Image (cartoon, rainbow, N blue to C red; front, side, top):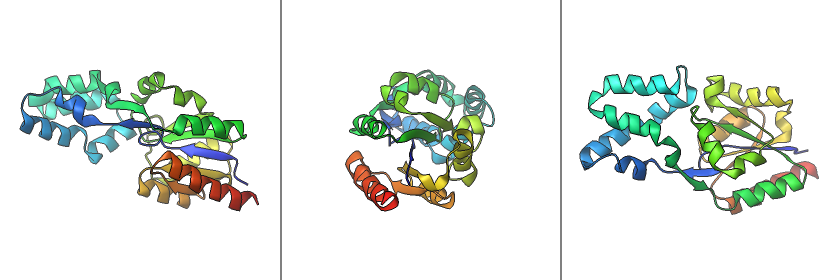
Length: 203
């Protein structure tokens, strides 16, 4: 029986876009594109999300490596919350509905410690019954250990969980951890696939 629904944060509960904010740091398009390549690359974001050293130290390290962008790196940290633009359409209402139906709702996200500032900004996060954040565990999806960490923390059985994420690689990780999983595209598609799993598992 499905009892728990687990949500990624970025592109599932809230949307984000680095480009417009970073564009405001520059008058030089070439420099802007290079900075975006450095500070919004999957490799750099993984380092931030794992946070083996504090986020502020990661930024300081980048300033040492790329002193030409020291000013913009400080702006990146200062304006970080502005990268997150809005709640994903339809998801707040869906989470309210799922809670009313008796499901427990959890978050499992790859995100640096700045996520706590983001969570203050959007009401959708108050609907979660618990969460695991990669930067606090120093483990990132799709490592099976982080899915197990959530289960251990809240006493969940993987077979009673449905996980959703916009990144397919993280869906694979959840399945390896013993969960049902849905590759997220939008609220309507997610709800449709979730209802199919619930019907199948709870019949």
